[in-house]
Amino acid sequence: GGRRSGTSTLKAEVALVLGTYLVAMVVPNVSLMISLAGSLAGTMSAIILPALMDLRGGDGNRVLNVFIIGVGVVLMGLGAGSSIVSIYDELV
Image 1 (cartoon, rainbow, N blue to C red):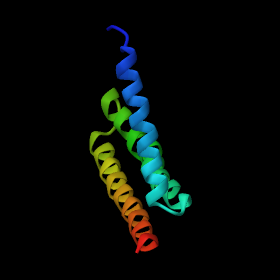
Image 2 (image 1 turned 180 degrees about the horizontal axis):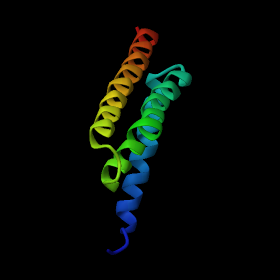
Image 3 (image 1 turned 180 degrees about the vertical axis):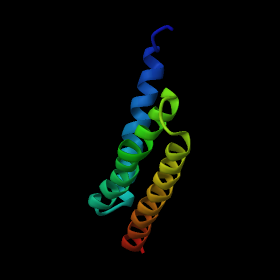
Image 4 (image 1 turned 135 degrees about the vertical axis):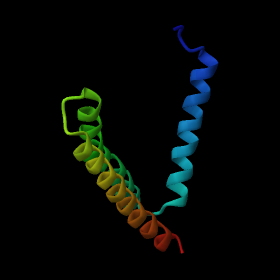
């Protein structure tokens, strides 16, 4: 694979900066965004990814791993939903 061109990298950087700026302007309380990111990343890294890795490794209990992944997805949805409701309540 080749390296990205300077124009492509610049476009990605501008998009990230503008996206961050828009989020900062829309969401007045940054702790709410941290809560959302934590609920998504925390559940993914602590519950879902270990079960996925064990599932892909082939040595673990398949039914248990699928159950853990399902529970993780539900918990991630609940955590993200709660954070999104808090962000909405703050905006309205």
